[in-house]
Image 1: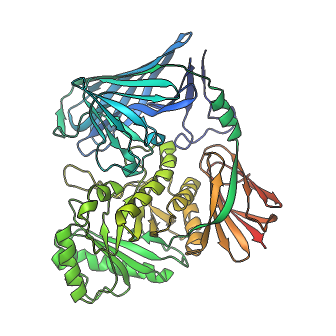
Image 2: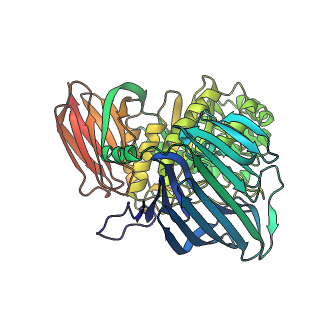
Image 3: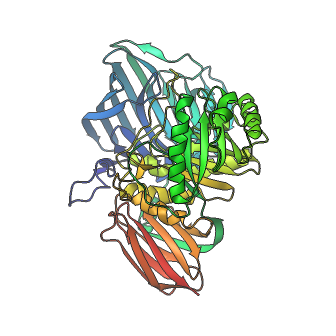
Length: 613
């Protein structure tokens, strides 16, 4: 039986924001279910069981920048249990243009996807073709890798984040789940798999062309790429009833609040250049300033950051990016007072190089610096993971940064990245071997291009979602993910401007309102929040004298409800709630006994105070 429906958007009401609420078509064909959103075939399931997170074609230029896709000429045809979905994609961006045609066929035992692409104009590229995203739940799953020469190798998806490609020279992958054997075959190129959790993407990605081949390559106008994948299922399909039941059960999230599991981490802001005066944030731990470019500009930037820090009663966290570590102490002479932490990173590798660490450390010690010296990377966890063996053993702490949009700007993928932030922090703590970890800056979009082949890092990117309620909801979930013991601080955003938490007139954006409240709670006990099943509501309970302060956010474009069982001695009937920002008209909180019920509007964040005995 086949059905097609738009299962996400409501039947009536105002037009939704296409970024926050993209049109999604849910396609059923026999045991298969596929969600078509834009150019992505996503959430592919077989008999109700997740198989692949997504299949899509990507075009990336010589700097690893992704060309923006635009879908045209969508056609869904066929009858019975065999259906074909096809569409044209126009790719454009960064001076490059490309076009492709995707055709996908669903039959009772297989899903086939074909891609044919053609360059509209000449450009340089690092990658063109199909990519397959495997869900993070595959971690630890056994599989067989079928090589291009026909040989096979038994392997597993990595549990800990793998610094390098776990599978290479792929012609096909084979694995089993609940009695069904899946074979994923590739044509048109040699494929390999990387662990995208390094960048906090919620996936393992199988892609072409192997990174062992030279890149970038010149693509002439009219050059054609043809690739295909074939996902075959063999064995009993079972039933899809569990999926429908699980969806219904998840309509109201059930969350139990338990004992203390963490502390609210110290929060920091990254210094920015945009005009605007951020109101004081009591409890803010630090202002993080990156000193890049010519040394003669470091002093003024450091002084501006120091003024910002003084306005909040915060310390300075200085990150120096230089190829001349021997000059760091002299360049900062007379300005080291108030610097609590300092790290030195190479402008090419973006990590702390051992030789630079030694030279800068000795000079800073001679200059009387008594703060904490950090090592790690100013880029993604990837760089820390791949260079962990080279990190100085005498570093007081390690650091790495986070952006959820290294590979995709799809809001659903941004939301799915949050649990991967927790995993990245846990892996960083493992590499730190008992030392603390400082996370950040955490930004919606990249601060610079850490993988540019030209060596030009480019400029910081911004996201139009920065000032809206989405960013507050996402930030709450991020802080909850980054609260494990051992995370010594987390840095978010900038004071003002397109990457900031307030407008030029000082008005706090929703994310700023959230950070103001949480900064003041530094060190307060965080209570366990255990959901019965995954859902869109993030819950972050904090214990304060005489009360539970419960932060809750809806990370979806639909209203969501949660029933929350508070700790023994709590009185949900005394609950008083405030909604952060303007994202919550219609949000409602009620309670009786220990049970608190929250109805949250799309992307709303609420703060609830309930008395405790």
